[in-house]
Picture 1 (cartoon, rainbow, N blue to C red):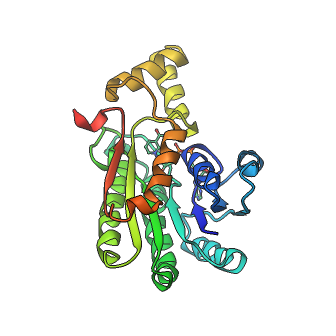
Picture 2 (picture 1 turned 90 degrees about the horizontal axis):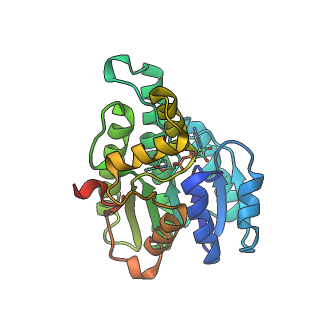
Length: 253
Ligand code: NAD
C-alpha cells in the first residue's frame, strides 16, 4: 500500500486531495492545525490507514520530526503533497516583516525541506510522486500579495528543479495552480471584502470571482483531488515539471 503525506490536510484543498488519494487505497498521513476529527471522519469510509502529525511546517525541526514519524509509523512517504499555505494581504511598504517571513517559510521553504527529506527513499524505490499546490499566483501577480506571489512563483521554480533532478527516475514532481477555491483561506478574504465595501457576503463572493476568474465559478476541492490523483497515477509518469492550471480561465487572459 502506498503512503501519502498531505500537508495542511485538516481543512480545504489538502483534505480534498487526501480524500481522493484515500479513495484509491492510499494510506494517508494528515498534517495541519485544528481539530483533526472532521478530516478523520471524511476519510473513514475509504478504510485506509490514517495517521496524523501536527508539525508546524514553518519550523524545519518540526518537519524533520514529521518525517521521522512517517518512517517509523508508515515505513516512509511514497506520495508527498505540499499543500499547506497561508495568505497575508498588504501593500509592500506596509507588509509586516514577520508576515513575509511566515508566508515564505510555510508556502515555499517547507516544500524544500519535505522534498529533500522524502527523495532518498523515493530514489531507493525508484518511484515517487511530489505534487506541489501552487496557485494562479504562481504564474501571475495581484497587488497586495507580495509574499504569497513570491512564494508561489518560487514553488513553481522548485517544482521544475525537482522534476529535472529526478527526470531519469520513476519519481515525478508537478504543480497544480488553482484559481479561487471556496475554502476557509478564501472565506476570510471574502469576509474582509464584505466588511471593507459594506456589501453582503454573497456580493463579496461574486465580486471576488468576477474580478479574476472568467468562469465565474469556484474551483472545487473534489476537482483538485481528482487532478492530484491523476498526477500520482501511472498515466502521468511522463508529466514532469508541469504547472497545471485549474483557474476557470484566470491566467488565460
Ligand atoms: P486552508 O486555510 O483551508 O487550509 C490550510 C491548511 O494548512 C490547514 O490544514 C491548516 O491547518 C494548515 N496550516 C496552516 N499553517 C500551517 C503550518 N504552519 N504548519 C502546518 N500546517 C499549517 O487553505 P486552502 O485554501 O485549502 O489552501 C491550501 C493550499 O492551496 C495553500 O497552499 C493555498 O495557497 C493554495 N491555494 C488556495 C486557493 C484557494 O482559493 N483557496 C487558490 C490557490 C492556491
